[in-house]
Length: 296
Image (cartoon, rainbow, N blue to C red; front, side):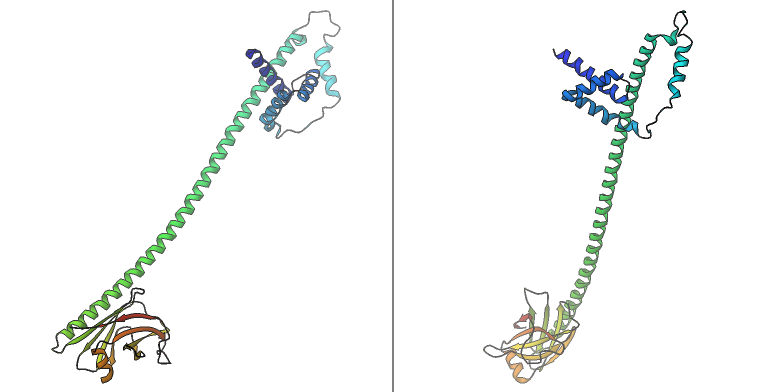
């Protein structure tokens, strides 16, 4: 039973192929067309062969033969032997033409199959080329993004190296100032001003018995339209401005009263104010560093 179904499917495939190629006789074509209307299997086979062989129609248009073509064909095939009692030759052999027709059908179907296979290979090759082009474009895009990220990281590294160099310079200056103060016989006060919330660090050095204090910015960026302002903070009193301090070493003058407060343990604080300092005598900007005096 299974073998019979296989043979029926093979016959159906052959009929569909011959129908699409156009080698079926008119009666067979009509019977196959009627079968397609009632048999889903036949309709599917017809659709498969039409899809396979549709490329063969490209480049060919419909042509109507002249009326004289049929007459010339009849004259060449049948005129000489129509009234002759002689034995029909090869060209008048019905068996020959049937066999030739079968061979032609087989050749046409084989050609169609070869063309369909070739078309499939070409399509697969085109798909592979498109996929390769997409992969190449994606790789180029990833490479550009990586190069952009690498350039940004290199720029950030250079910036950090510059900040590190500035910090080292400030630290060296502060150490030199501290060493200079230590060489003197008078006791000194050292105030390290910093905050865990910012990168700003300042170092203040005051030699007791003098009315001066030296301030140094150790780390942190300055702002072109802003100034640092130094404040003396005494418990239970309003902070007092000691003036604007610059980017490098700044000498801050202290009155006897302020000197006494500082030497008694008064706090120092630095805020960021508008250019020239706070106009109100009260801190307007954020406080970025605070420190307590340490006696050495």
